[in-house]
Image 1 (spheres, rainbow, N blue to C red):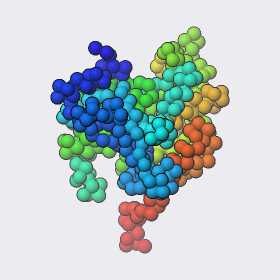
Image 2: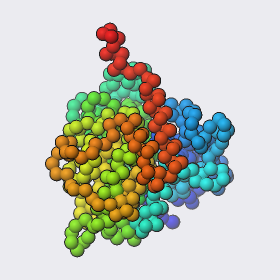
Image 3: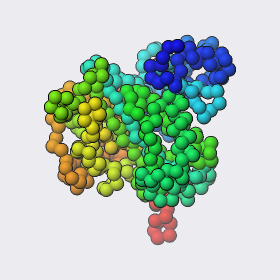
Image 4: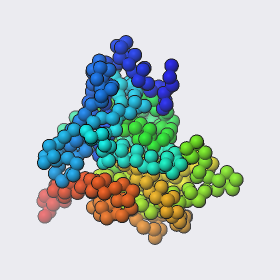
Length: 457
């Protein structure tokens, strides 16, 4: 039997074909990731998948990369509009991503890249963006590996009940701070255990679960992998956690800041290896960081403000960035210093940098692409690493990360580096994405305004 290139729990094409023929699988989800980081696509009958979709793929309307969060069509995108007829994109199936969906009966999933009907890659697709940076790293002689640490909130309130209550008075799964608390984890262990074991069966290497600081806040950690595999696993896990909670009458949210207490982060760990797995970030003889590692760190720092839109893609994302919150405010680096936006940890093969800027709402493909692009830019331009921050970075004189989406939008739109590394089309597309979000938010009437002014103004 041919082994799977990613994980033995995942399926090869031959194994999927046999499972469909044997009646073990009757439905195949074909999915891609949209701008908001959500899996979109179709559920294909197993028989039709073998007969047609396996060889010829499938298609979807190109408006799916130019809609807002509510799935409304939005004017102003170059790739998709009424004037252009809202044509198709084609699914380019990545047959290394075939996995069972254990919490759904007789179902498998395949993740896909997107091409135009001409065969050209859709450059603004999040997976395409990351793949382009991965290919650049390989061309330079490096393999990029990463891991994402994704926090989320669990509520003993269903999604339907939460919506009917306007997301007020929700019941968190824990009623106190459960950071590292074994008792706190035990209280929600039925769901956490189910998610851990299900993700293992779906081909992910599960490391651990732990409580976090907010009420009902938890994190499940997975082993690092190459950047595309990590992003693929991330979006599958996020989708699965929501569905598995819903099956129990619960809900989870990956909002960056769902309430006034601690926000939910998505810390990203990243390092480079040689294409044969050799060390490039660490000098084994001196026991110190290499110059290449320092250039990489310097590149991530130099581009952090310009690329924040890819790390913090929503209005709510910026509510995390508060002094003393364990979410960074300073563009600074330190050795095992959690007050910095970049924290260096490990030695030898474990030497890596942790980017603490992204929240749990980040699109992993965009965030990983931004981090890798910044690091490679630093290597190519041999950027000098600024002095290390010691002590409390919140009180340092380092530059601050953008505090609003409007500020991040301006930095991204006017960034010569972003246009150099991502291309004009990508920058214009995601600038317009930010414009749409900002316009809609500025037109909304918030609870804060009503509570503050209903009687007193």
